[in-house]
Length: 328
Image (cartoon, rainbow, N blue to C red; front, side):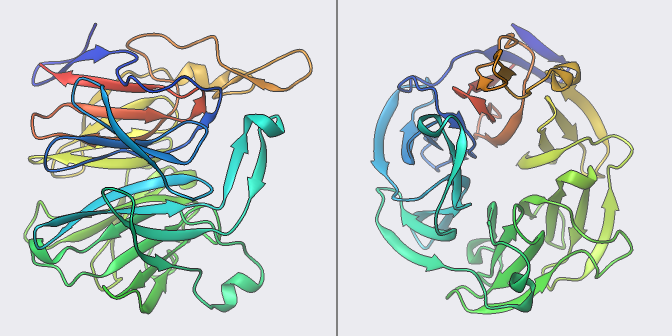
């Protein structure tokens, strides 16, 4: 099935990843190595899985996390590493999709699962009255001229973003008060954009339906998207285009001026179904949705793009759905 048009056309490849089936509630990101391998998390277990471009499972390892949520790949010298945000809570099928909760954290791994660094909750007054639940990581990589700073989005907790140096030492926090747009409300995903001469931090201010942009010193620069975004959740770029996953059932392609030029798989009406992103049974309990359709998204959560401009999209729902959009 073909979606999009013109230069932004893709072949929709349904059920792309050959992953063990599960009734787990998928809630994860996606990342791609320099070798073109796609990394994601299993729907139920916190097993990190690596696939080739055809969806074949190459390897897997147990992360020991509660929920492997946001996944970011970085390269230091000749070695690639994974940063994973563990929200500390997971809707488990064994608990009738109630949340199991444990210690939230941010962890740096080698690609084969060895722990390299942990970043725990910072000791700040904001956590006297808020939980900590990190959702995403962005790194100002030295290989692209950055200083190695690590930015952590506490999207499901205090709705703020913490900055650390490359050794994990806390530097500062931003929460939206720095600019004219106001407080973040679920800054779900963050992304360091190197397309322009001045590197910028993009923030998916999801529950406010917009994106805020900061410089790498934590200064507010601009806000955009309140006139077209509904629920920005994740970012990817290829060349001068940015692709944004919207939880409410579509992808948005932006040009370098932050203007929308294409919508992919739009299916916003499905978000009005009772129990979305799932369905409800007669007892009011979550069950897998009956409304998945090729060419239409249900709940895009994380995405990544490979060197051939193919997109890989992970959705948030019971059983999960992992789709490849092959560039035409």
